[in-house]
Length: 306
Ligand SMILES: Cc1ncc(COP(=O)(O)O)c(C=O)c1O
Image (cartoon, protein in one colour):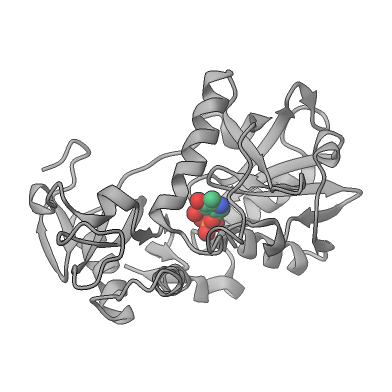
């Protein structure tokens, strides 16, 4: 049994006791970050527990693996079933799922050849990512002194384990300066994204979010929010955003599986809008939080009932 009360982890194709999902210290991924992962949430609505956009997340896991030529040891269907099984076996209510596939124990050369790919799915309770008041009151953000890894250096559309050292540097610096989260610029000086979230600005009732050429991870929450916004008749543009535009936006918010739809109330001492959750942000946040719990019949295909 783990500290969070969960008892099992899906490990290389089967559920094993939580404490048995272990690796050797010479595991390739520990040394070089050679793994790919996902973050997924399950929500409970009137019709029960459901995993949000499970298939899209597992597809992205396989695309991330393909970007690094990590050979998956299990099929897409097996990993999807593993996600469902681990939630069921642990009797979880609303929770977070962490599928990961990584290069295992074997020769330690940077170029791996015959090392196995290990695959795990853990699930555990995880509340509001950016603090209990974040969703309602918004967070304080600083532009990082670290720029986001560039797509000419890494496949930035992939969720590669080693890529997250960039996020770690940025979020640590932000916390040490007394902020809740970092906003990273791309190497051309345009805005990229947060350490684990995509950014949206609202101006005159229209949304704008950076595109893939700003080296962002194409977030599944970002895509869901864009769809909900368009359904609501809002204009959504994808394109470059400058630092100054963030400081003067009517509203700003982050999206992510962990962060959900989190308003940004301040960036580097610039108060955004009225300094709280703006009206469009609130509309999209409540639309998102309703859809994830089955409150939007048109988006039922986003949910996999557990
Ligand atoms: C760097 C980064 N950007 C954006 C996101 C948001 O992606 P998603 O909405 O798919 O969770 C995440 C979280 O996965 C992330 O780690």
